[in-house]
Structure formats: structure tokens, C-alpha cells
View (cartoon, rainbow over the protein chains, first blue to last red):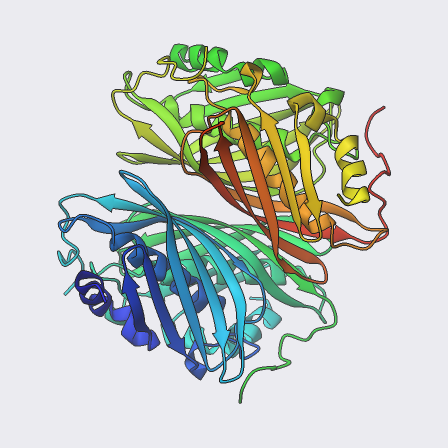
Length: 145
Length: 145
Length: 145
Length: 145
């Protein structure tokens, strides 16, 4: 587990609000999961697409962040998500890998699986572009307090 | 306000969990907003990109749904989101319009603004593809209970 | 017509190969068109989606480039294209506008129309992300000679 | 080599115009390459991003088409392309695989490589959504003659 990734993850209030857990963080890779909870569903009882997108984006951000300089911060430039099948299961598991680490931009690929005790089904894939902000500490809180 | 849109919105647990409000629903258009809440933030205190994406996707879904047959349901096929500036403000406001309504697929454009009493700033734009599922009632809950 | 845009356009061999014409270039905007030609078609006789994508990408690139510093060069980071209806007509006309000009990245929206003497039909929309490469002259040919 | 793919490919005038070759076509997979040619370049002498996008889209279309019913036709719904490094080499080689084959929609992932005698470098990745049009023969030319 990469320390700066875990620390940043823990500073994201939205992650704990969703009940998300940082499962793995290595150089160029990140895994996050979210257990099923009725609060996270859309009208048919599946995980909401917004939850799926959040996972895909966030895991990509931390996969990219793991390779960045210590005094850099990461921001998502854009992401594109294809929803392949209903997001259902005991939890959603997302794995993201850095495909290209550039000087300024990184591109990651994320896969989101719906998982039960018996099965694991790919329910979404994403391509995510991230930017490295040099000399911008991740814990420099600019928001409201 | 289109009744079937309001009803479907109210069935999405994730919307009330986020504190989202359906602000407007007309034929081919939908507006949703989410007030600022610390629970929705990323590490810098801005709205999390996942919240922004959720808004862009969901408003698009209901813009498209408003034009669909009464016995049809809507699903997001994919969306692509560009984050243009930090998502900050008293609330996020998203407006989505149907650009193309096809026989099976619809394409919408969503814009997300960060709004305060004094200003409104475009913080994200999205292109969203939706599919119409004929003879699939929106309130046919297939999920867990 | 912005001179540096016209000059760069004229250096793109692929544009003349396709028969593309730079129709308009202003600050933050660009228009390019391509007359119908059987060589540009797919199996049904419509303009090939690759031609549509080329237009959407290239017009975006020059819309963004028009706002960049004189000694900067532009590169496409990524683009996402929705094909809305068959690309047919006497020519394709693409208009692209800068939605956000950032310090490093710009985001443009492109629209491609199929045009005849009697009609103009929107056939594709795109979101395009471009990067400004400082101190990299556009005419610095790094390719084969 | 799947016959209907090869036949459709041969009906695309744009492919021969670009000098593209269908290298492989199997169930759920397709490979296309394009040799370097000055006519295909942008201002720096690299392959134009439009050529890269054309490859990514077209290989995806035929990967999906290979799994469709005999009397079906394929259309691209949308694609999203990330350009990772300059598209250079003796030729571009694109491989696309079907990630999800749905009843109506398919989603493919394409990778484009710049290849020389000595090296192979990933220069672009794409996610592509395709739709199956039932009872629409691929050789039913609706275009101009």
C-alpha cells in the first residue's frame, strides 16, 4: 500500500460517505471496492452509474498518482465510461492501471466488476486522463471548512 | 415537471443520499442540482468528480427518458466527461439536453455549473449515450429488497 | 483567417489528400469542410466515420491553436465522437469552438454537418482535449522527409 | 479470415484510399494496418490523428461485425480515442477486441501501434461502441453512385 495514496484516499470525504475501501495501491495500479448498500442504488436496485463512474475515476486517479513526484497533486482531466451490464453484486470492485505515464498527462484504464461469493462480472470499463500538478501538495485544502 | 421523470427520480435512492433535487424536467431537457455538503468532497474540499459525473449522467438520462414511450425504461450506454474547473460553489447545477433522439439510442449534452449567490461557473461538460428499453417499466425493481 | 492556423493547415498533407478546405479561422473557433468524394466512403456510400472524426479533431485542434502563444504547438490529447446520423451530403462541414482555455489544456466542442444545396443536418458531435506545447514551433518537422 | 468482414472491408473505398490492409479477422477480433505515406501526415510528419482514429474505429467495427448475424449490418455509435505518443513508424497496426457483445450493442477496445523493423510502440487506445442493425445487409449501398 503506497502511503501517500492511502493518506489522500482518507482525505476524500466522499469515499467514506460511499463506504469505499482502498483495497490495493501499488506503482501504476490501484484497486477500490464499494459494498452494496441500498443508498447507492438507482431505480432498479442496481448500483447507480454514478457510483460506478466514481470508482472508475478514483481508482485511475490513484493509479496515476502513485507514479507522480512527492510534491505533485493529481487531477482528472476527463473520463469516458462504458456501462456493459447491470452493476449488481455484494460489492463493486474496480481495478485501474496506468497505460501511459507522460511528463504531464497520464492515461489509465479502469475495469469495474460486480462481485458475489460465486461470481465476478465485468460491468464497466473506462479510459481516464489525469494531469500532474507539480508543486501542489495533495493535502493543501482549498475548500470550505 | 414530467410526472414519470419525477417518479423515477424519487425511486433513485442514490439521489436522496446525495441530497440531489430535480429542479426541472421538460421534453428533451432535465435539470438537477446538489447543494454543497462536506460528505461529497475530494481531498481539496471541492465536490468530488464522481458527484459531477453522477449529475451529468443522471440529468442526461432523464432528458432522454422524457421523450421515450410510456412503457419504456432508460439505461446509460456510456458517458464522457470533461472536468473544466474545480467543482466548487454553494451547489452544483446540471442541465442536460437531448441532441439526437434516435429510434433506440439518444445522445445528450450535459453542462455542470458551480453556483454561488454571486456567480455561476461552468465546471464540466459531458456527452452521454442512452438506450431505450421498450416494454421495460422503470419501476420494475430487479434489485435487492 | 488567422495566419498561423492557415499555415499549419497547409502543412498537413492529410488535409489536401482528403480535399479538405479551411473555411474559417477566428480566435477560439475553426471551420473545415470536405466535399463528397467516393474515395472517402464506407461500405454504404456515406462518408467514412474516420473522415468525420478527422474533421472533428482537426477543427478542434485549430480552434484551440488560435488562442495559443506564437511559439507554441498544439497536440490532441483525446477526443470522443458521437455519430448521430449517416454522414451524407455534398460536403461535410465542421465547426469547432473552444469551451475552456486552460493554462496547459483546452477543451473544444465540434459539430459536423452533412450539407446539400437544400439542407444541413447535424451528423456528429465531439468533445476534444488539446494540449499546448510551449516553445515547440508548429513547423518544426520531426517526421520523415 | 472471416469472409463477410473481408468483403465489407473491400467495399470501403476509404480503406483502399488510405492504403489500409485487413491483416486478420477472427471471431471477436480484427487487425488492420496502414503503411506510412506522406499523404497521411500532419504538420510534424507523423501519421495524422484522423488516420489513427480511423484505424481504431474501423478495426472495432469489424471485430464486432464478426460476431453479428449474417443479415445484420454494423454502425459505429461513438468512439473515444486517447493519443498516447506520436504516431510514427513504417506502418500503424491496430488490433481491436470485443469486450462485450450485447443483444444490440457491442463494446470494443482498440490499440494502435507504431511499428518499425525494430520496435512496436503503443500510440493510441480507444473504446468503441457499435450497434447491430438487424436485417440490413452490409452491401446494401445507400450512397451515391
